[in-house]
Image (tube, rainbow, N blue to C red; front, side):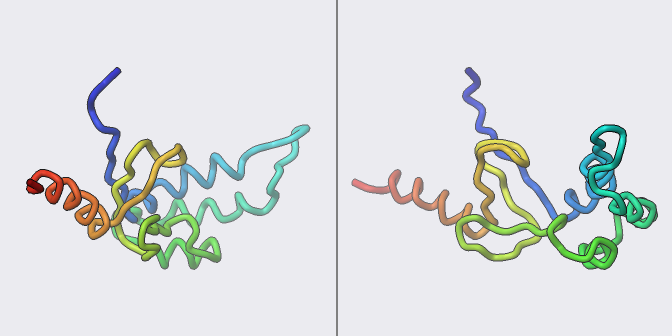
Length: 117
C-alpha cells in the first residue's frame, strides 16, 4: 500500500476543458439502437466550437442551459469556488472537495497539534 496521499487539484478550467468529451460520452448512450437522450447531442457541435482555453463557465452554461457541468463547490463551507483540492480520490469517487481556505484551516489543525505541550 502506498503512503502517498491521494490529493489532486481540480479547477474550473479543468472542468471546462472536459465538457465536450464528457457531454459526448454521457449523451451518446443508446438502448436498442436508439439514443437515450435524443436532442442532447445537438449541442455537441457548439460545445466543440468553444475555445476551451479561453471560454468562460458562462459560455458553457449559455449552450447547455445551466452551470452544473462547470460548477465547483467546497464541500466544507459550501462556497462556489474556482478550484478545489480533491482529498481521497479523483472526480466521482469517494472524496471531499476543499477550497483553499478550508484546506488551510484543516492544515492548521496539524500545526496546533505539533505546537501543543
